Length: 168
Image 1 (cartoon, rainbow, N blue to C red):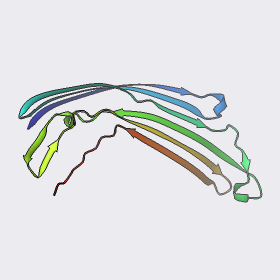
Image 2: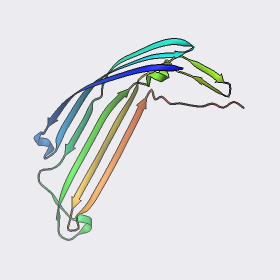
Image 3: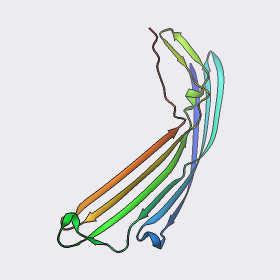
Image 4: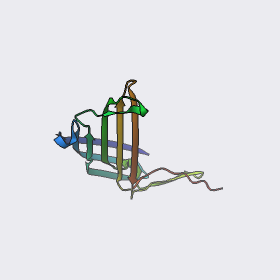
């Protein structure tokens, strides 16, 4: 087989940065990247096929951070005198969309090697991944201790993968 492939991608991002008083020294960031992808494939394997993909993606992300303006004083690990500490709480969320590679969208069955038969899947859909994360940081004390607690979550919808099946 042989093919000619052409890929173009354009991206425009709008970012908003807010510093509201109720977040102390914290902030809110909103990023709205708009991506346009054009893929074209001229493919020949027994027959000529031409595929074109034109996709728009909006992959938004949000970040919120809370940081008190005044540093509290706490008894660090049961110390006798309260020590000044710095605290940060952060939350992030993002949605990322991607399309399958255009080569996987070509409709073919390759059985030239009977021990290795390949099929394509022209019905693949876009993949979307939702990612959430947060963390809490507490720093301070005489010895500058740090307490860091983190949590992450990610979920992919319409995931695509390659598989092999062996028949004895």
